[in-house]
Length: 330
Ligand SMILES: O=c1ccn([C@@H]2O[C@H](COP(=O)(O)OP(=O)(O)O[C@H]3OC[C@@H](O)[C@H](O)[C@H]3O)[C@@H](O)[C@H]2O)c(=O)[nH]1
Image 1 (tube, rainbow, N blue to C red):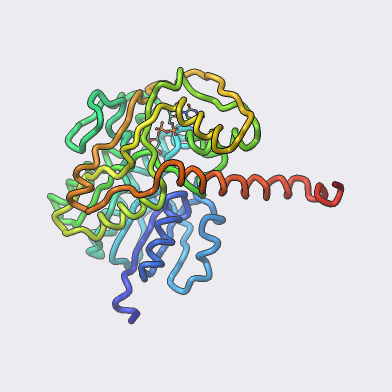
Image 2: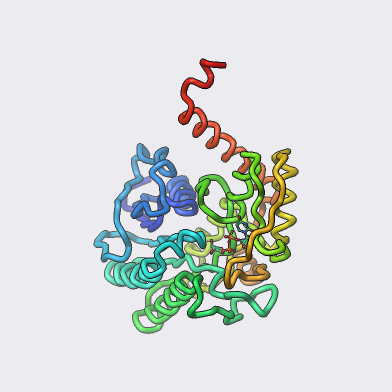
């Protein structure tokens, strides 16, 4: 492809779980990819296999500081997404969403780039409306422990729409629902990786509350496809658009599925429900279907199988590194 035709795409949070899959997809689509990450939750291992690709570049940078690069499109994914990670340094989490959005919007304005914000289903808080359409304004506790993430992302959405109205920026906002798949960190803290790692290690499966709260889980390749479609959609499709899989289940059901799939002897134990933990969540994806021609294609069972396979390999490597002589000794 002639250099001039190759789109230059910036992915912030590009070494993270979603970001690394997105970088991979964009390279496959023939884009030149600039991956930016501060490595708080991103990992070099996630992008190691891309480092030798001729049109891939990695820059260590924190989006709370301005960035001066020349690009055609920006996917702003940078922010820790797991509750334990975003609550670790809540002030920094809000800064990442708010200052990060301001810096990336400033960049988009200067270089006239199209810009997509990774927002979240957490903007709906503990929803009083079910399933959640984009028109629902949410029920967020602004002073609770999740607010740094929820309100940070809500403010990022506000900034996007103000830059759109005030400066005519070409914006996209995706509201991402629970997503899972390979390259989640084993200590990510979110439910799918926690349960799989616990099951594979034969440890207790920690269900918070009574496990009757619900979530709807989307496989990472489907999610990435939704983001790319949103970026490539006609300019009037600004969003916000829900991207998620509407198949809803209780957390207890998920625990049972993981136990069945891994053949684990682990047992379910109940732990206290974290404060403000949403009781139910399911995306209404009517808009994604009509505006993007998008719907998820990967069944939960298939997605869980490949995620289990990923963690099996990862844990085997960890074990071998911890006990290098184990094989010899046997
Ligand atoms: O070990 C665990 C972990 C989590 N859980 C429960 O499982 C449910 C899902 O928890 P997760 O931490 O995976 O994710 P949450 O739905 O709370 O938040 C997520 O929402 C959408 C995204 O934007 C974010 O990635 C993340 O904040 C919660 O009810 C939680 O209490 C367990 O029962 N056990």
